[in-house]
Image (cartoon, rainbow, N blue to C red; front, side, top):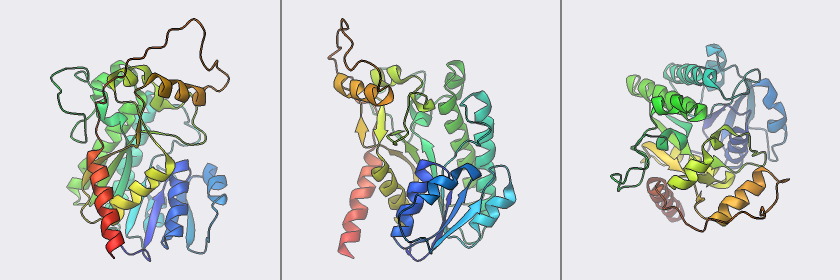
Length: 299
């Protein structure tokens, strides 16, 4: 992909979208940043040359606003941001996210210039399954696995349900419309505004015990997104994380970040020194990024 090309970042209202927008501008892309009205502040904080930045108002349910933002773009980086009037992660948000995913894939199908879509999903769309503790699963959970939507509904894992249904909707449309799409199944993003209310964290204790509590920092996440977009060999789904929390000290450090006011080491509480075995693999993404970096250095 030529860096001179125009790409669309949708939704640029959130931390992922704004960070992607800034990095793409730094790499020389023209960026169509489609953002909801509450995302104005994030884009205003971008510290680089904005002459190649075009900002579009976005309504996830307004098909035309998506078409306007995509016009003339060769690629799309898509991540869902809840509308401001629907900030809570509940059963309803799954319907909202699925509808938004359907709209954006349809808009891409009607935009002739779109060559590639990078669809940001979640690692939670991979590991919430009835058989996740089964010893029969000798292999790591990876991109071939999907969370069980009935399991997610039963335990009210709304974030996992939303991401699973939205990603499956996107893949169904991508295949039906012959769209070139890759998805990024992202771990818990260690963003500056991360808090205990993040919906990804529901079931965190079980994730830790199962060896699937994975995190990703912003720089790695952005590098990975751009890698899968620019590398013509990328395909399918990619689990995206660069850290796993499977030691007691790592879990305590995360807890301190989420609840800074809590005691750093509660007295009278025995610390479990067992280390859950890692049961989730990001080998596919790591291999792609190493090979992409090698090819870039040769050029």
